[in-house]
Length: 202
Image (cartoon, rainbow, N blue to C red; front, side):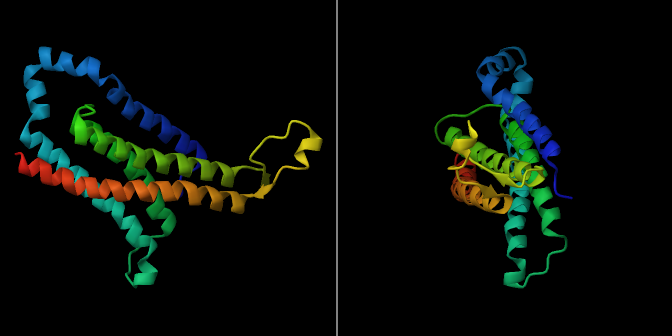
């Protein structure tokens, strides 16, 4: 059930569509505020923010289950389903999280702390998606060997290092997964602080 390269490319387009409103929020948010006052009040209201916030928190906690699933044998915890199933759920749920963040924020990039928090979340999502797409592209490629630099001539090609799929995937995973885990760690800390601020200033 692991997503194929073509499915992941579609998910990149879906993520791009979800992220587009954040790029244009400075144009449409004032229009909503000026012409759709009641709708704007709902988007900014405590009930709306709390409801969508708790849904987001539930999705984040479900995403964390993947980390537990990876270590379940080591910790002697029984969690049904294969790693491929959980990895697929993690990927699709990550896209769902992007969509839910759009619903929660209305596309607003926020200010100060909230802006940094949002960009860290984007980094978490995009580091994972780009890494998985690159990895899957290599695995599904008919080529057996890869060079990081394309050879211009056959003489130059003799001096370039050649990598097998396994070596290249492991090297890529070391880079993107390290970045992803680092950003997830920052995100979890910021999430706790975000929840505290939301209730402190309520």
